[in-house]
Image (tube, rainbow over all chains, first blue to last red; front, top):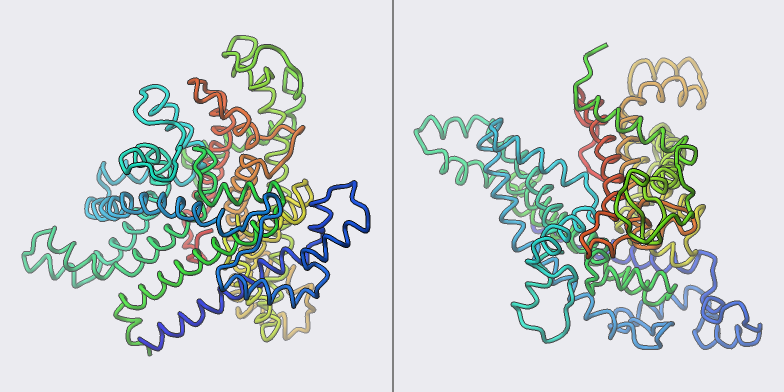
Length: 315
Length: 271
């Protein structure tokens, strides 16, 4: 098992490197010159050449990639083209904002989703099961901004319970922060809970049909004990996998939700950078998003290996 | 002909409505796309069923006209991604060997990065225009189509009838169009529905972020963004285009569910 996990970790590091090649290559191979983007249409050839030299654009692509990667691995993310500030100073506060929102959603959502999944599996075919399933299907099909706008309309405009914009600032108290971020959290919650719950239900159901679960029932054990001690541990691997996948979604999929609630996260950071065509900012944000995604998927695979008895002893 | 369940009828009805708006929208609209007919955010009236938008333009007319862009761009991108993904997937399955390895590795690598992030990187470099939007989404989406086409074709390629055709000395064209494609069609059609949904939500999402379809064209995602402020005053304005987006997605999902009802899924993965 240790070897399998080590292999997966090595593959994860390799993937991270591929992501860096993709992000850098994607921005370099594509036409569109950064220097002319900065100076605009009135640039003279001389000033263009001077700026290219200043930005190091006259170096060969491989040399630029290596120096970019070396800087990146030391935490130097380059300078923003638009504001001339170090990208790292601008990026990390936004990154932590996004992580905080994702963590808030995960802390509320994951136990709720797994609980609902187990409960619907136990009550298979009942009214509760069917109602939750229809609701979950609808949540998955609806776009995030539709849910977000609906929540704003009902919760903050009609009843005035929560603020409609998620204004956060450094040093605000936990209570104020929770109040500001609860609506975006609820929006993300609806989408992720639906997916995790459906997967949990399927995983538990497939275990519940097996002979040893029937044996446990025939031994005279109570339903609660059969489900929690016999069925759920064996359904854990796919559940862990879908949870990690959904947290990866939380970190990258927040982009739209952040736009609905004006939340100062990494998603809006990246969208702003794209509309200003600020290359170093986009590269840095893409790398951070890509890394978060790869690391979470890797964690999911490692956890699935560690939890699955059949994968623990590969043939 | 088996009986069509109610849910599928609802789905087909929604798709038909959207198709009509897509094909005939500009002729059905009573007011022009850019025509100012009253005060911003005016409430619904017999004249303007869904009220007016943030600039005082008729909401219903803009929805009808916007169908062309919203549906057209995603339809073009889905068609393009299928015409790239399917041949490559079939070729990888038929030839195997290094062609398969190289193509599959490239696809795996692209799929390591979330689609939205890849798309944003490209849009940063090229700026947002209709061809860039369609080609970028099609290429990113083609990776998913490639995977499905490859798996399906691999299954068919080892069947007796495919083996017979090969022994008969049929060429590559015959193998693809006469043997594999007809048998791979059902799962691929269902996949087309799902991929269209995904592309449609994706285009609408990009437009909502201001990075998709650009003004002056009306499109549903952009309309949500433009009217978003209205929600703070308790107006339904941004909810109409958002509901239009949600409705089409649900409609296509209902039909795909019906198509896949008696069939086990070919591949376990989601998007």
